Amino acid sequence: MLPIFNYLLKGALPQDSVEANRLRVRAARYTIIRDQLYKRGFSLPLLKCLTKEQGKLVLEEIHGGVCENHTGGYRWH
Image 1 (cartoon, one colour):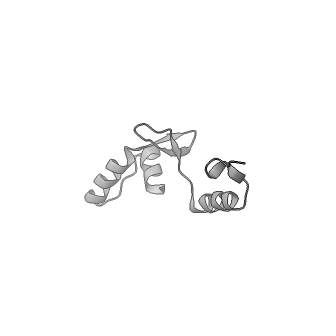
Image 2: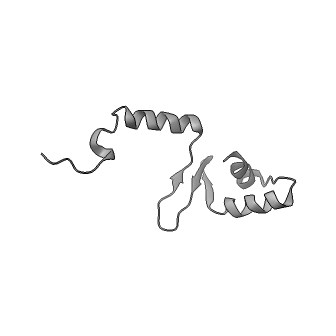
Image 3: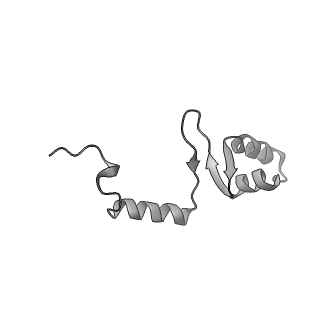
């Protein structure tokens, strides 16, 4: 995600013209808000892009029970 972030923030493109074109096309689906990268969806809310470390932490919290029953379906008693 760093190349997309750098392109959107500074306009930095790779030297290779094929890679530069690919990056431009991919970057069109992203936006930066308050120095944070988000992926845009057609009918979805903005999706926050995470680093690998942040992603691991989120998964550990979810699987560790922080979200309890909010990650699954309804719990019927």
